[in-house]
Image 1 (spheres, rainbow, N blue to C red):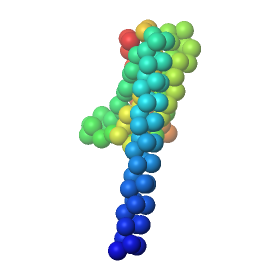
Image 2: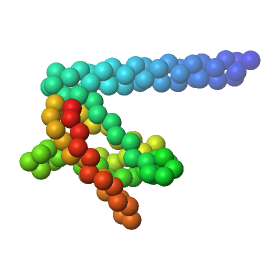
Image 3: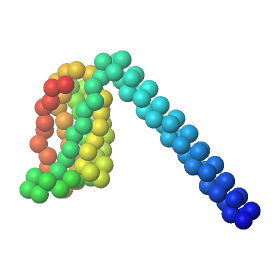
Length: 110
């Protein structure tokens, strides 16, 4: 019985540590979002999919530029074909790159 109690104590302690870490990460995420908002930036997400099948495309390199060709953000799509960015209000052009694929340039307003 004693051994079982020790095991449960260890399990509960690990769970408590995980919960503390989760709360710290959540607080950090909220602080990051707040900072972006204070800077006047807005969240933007894009999703890259196969044109015919709507199948998400992972590992597509995304470059976001201003009208005067200044790079504002770069990233790569995840396994669900999505990439997330924070951008100030303005007009942007989205360039998507993946070897063997062609994607149209997109113009967005934020």
